[in-house]
Image (cartoon, rainbow, N blue to C red; front, side, top):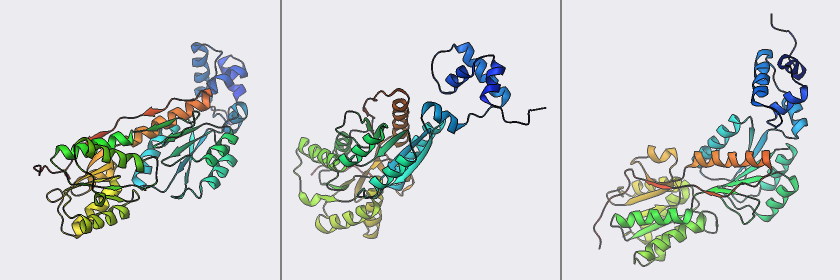
Length: 340
């Protein structure tokens, strides 16, 4: 019969014929034992059905096995894909995730940082917005590591995981130019956003310049990365620059807004208007027609960010910045035309 009492670390040590200290070292992935000893301890844990107490383990290594994730108000699908990557990696390494949705302007960020401090998280993943000095100071005072995803910062102690937004935007516009388009409009993200807003606009402008296409200010409309920004932006373009043959949208959600406005006004995609989005969220392949877009490997970015953070928690060594590759995913929203 199985013992009626819950197994203790002492039971494991007795079964494996090692000290309690050795069992503790194995449980906390510390050094100082052989592979054979580790195997004996793991077998003893299995045979005794020992369940390591998270609180007791935390007292030993001063960790809670939790990480915090700060997400601003961006596309739901964008956030979901990154979170899925973070969550899967964290769970596979016995970490729990606390998700905090900050407001678009970051007004709740300081409040949530305080919540994460009270929860004694071991580290923070900060997503898609600027790490302001006041946020950085709070995190520094918490003495825990932070990793940025889809963002970057000037702080040497804060690594990031992102695509090269400038290059990705440049490649998207160059792709449209290669399809014969010269009257190319852009509906950008938030105008003053230095992380993804400005770089994508700069990539758009540089691609036009490198191909000898003069920039027309009517062709650039600032949005907000969301559906309503794309819808309003497309209505503005149709009113001010109906001659446009292609639109580059700074996010897939923005592109879906463009599709909706185009349909309302009887503009057919891609027959009358070509469209390229940015992100390659799941909705991009579900739209009608299916959206041609720039792929950000969002799930993988979440995984890489979690891996870097947990490594920093375990070792105290700052991880390196990482630019992840992007690509153009061709579907059904871009047509080819002859040059003027």
